[in-house]
Structure formats: structure tokens, C-alpha cells
Image 1: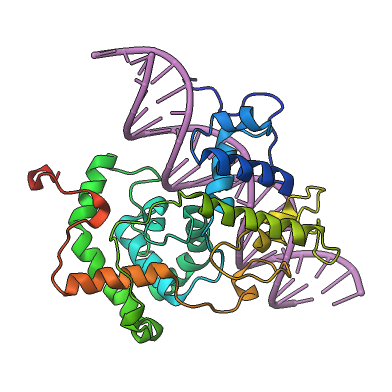
Image 2: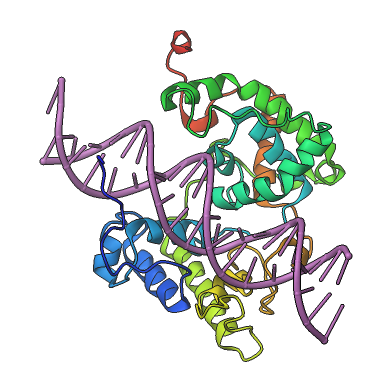
Length: 293
DNA sequence: AATAAAGTCAACCGCGGCGTC
DNA sequence: GGACGCCGCGGTTGACTTTAT
């Protein structure tokens, strides 16, 4: 009614992305930076809608994202954050810089939900359900509410991290100076270059005879070589991945070291324990305590 | 070895928020 | 102040893979 479908334009391609399309998109983002997605299809000739381009970039081509292989710390963190924030995957993802909201959402729906439900004895208490899909409160309000929850969140994080022996074993020396705010997306050309490397590897695996070229998209879409069976090839950013094109699921990968995100979180927690307070958390100063609700 | 069922994940859809005119 | 357009988010779907029978 009010709004026409975003991709009503005829000729807009849907479905899995091909490596060629990925290359075009990466090339464009390298030159122009992410953003102005509306202009991407027209400037690149990609027969994709702007949304699709943005999604592809943020979920797969963006450098520095890690896929599959969620560690116990990450699991615990997601569970706790989910309890605190509800299904605000973007907000949760901001605490896991290497993970995309889509990835976290999928992981929650496929793994953690069951896990938590089981742990809760099927009481169904695991889902706070922050108001039927959309936030029950306006954004500004929930952000403020989130800030009030910071202490609770920290406790939860501490809990989450302390539950995992591996976390406790992490040498404090690894902790880096930290911004408590979620890391900003990479902006330097070098960062984009790493994305180009992703694509290069992707193509490498795609063209390799044994590389399961089109196994993914059984229905003839070569892109599934990227997103399906060979999906892992497209996301080397940050984590070393074998070009074997394993299924991209967690079992296909070895257990890696704790992600930097956890160093950050731990550092944040440490800072807190040392009395550095909330300054800077969420990067948004709480203007007025009276604003709460 | 073949088939069915379950699990996983990439992508799409629709909605709401925010900025601009 | 209202209308319009773009962006981002969360829910959902469909295709593919893996596991069980």
C-alpha cells in the first residue's frame, strides 16, 4: 500500500550470488566504500537490488567476518545477550564484531534456542521475546534501557566468560586496549583489500575441479558454490580457512583461538572491575537519568 | 545403496526509523 | 509539519547438506 516493493523493478536478479557478482560488488565497495547502496546497482550494472547488495556485503564480503565455529564463549555470550536484549541480533552482533547478525540469528535459531530450552527444562523461559518481532519500545527508549542494563549485562558477561575454562585461561597479556563500543566497520582500503582476497580465494575454489564448483546450487545456480557447499571459501577474512571448500559448518573447521572480540570484552570487564566505570559504553553518554522511561 | 528426515544457512521480504526536501 | 526515499533490522523461507533408517 504505502510503499512499493523494494525490488519491484523487473529484471532484478534474485537468489544466490555468483562469484562474478561478488567481485563486482567488492570492487565497487573498494572504490567507493560501503554505503549509498541505492547507487550500487546502477553504477555497477549488477542486476541486484540495493538491499541485496548491502546484505551480501555485510554478511559475506565484508572483511574480518568469521563464519561457523562458534566458541563456547561466543555461545555463552550470545545466550546471555539474547536474554538481556531479546532478538536484537544487530545489537548482539555489535558485541561480536566478527559475526554478522544474520549468522548469530541463524546460530541461535538452529543451535542455541534448543540448547537453552533444553537447559531450561523445556519451560520455554528461554525466550524473552522482546515484543513480537519489533521492539516493544521505541529505539531511543530501548537504547536507554539497554544502558541501564549495562551492569546486568556485565554481570552476565562475567558469568558467561567465567563459565568457560578456556576464557579464564586466557592470558591477560592478550588483552588489548579497548573501546567498549562495538568496533567500527573497517574503513581503510587495506581492509577492503582483504575482502578482495576473499574473493580471490573464492574464485580459486570455485574454479578448481575438485572444488565442488556447483555442488551447492544444485538447481544450476553457480553461486551456491559460494554460499552453499563451498561457502567457506568466501570468508577468509580474519580466520584461516582451508580452500578445501568444506561445508562451512562448524564441524568442518578446527577450533580456533578465542576471537579478538573476547579480548575486548574481557578487557572491558577487567576495566570495569578495576573501577573504570561505564564511561564510553555504547559510546552514547546517558544524557539524563530522568529520561529513563 | 537408496530414501527419508532433520539440520543448516544464504537470501528474501516487509516494516520501522531516520534524514532530507 | 508532512511527504518521500533510503537504510537497517528481524522474521521467514527455500535450497542444500548431513545423518539416520
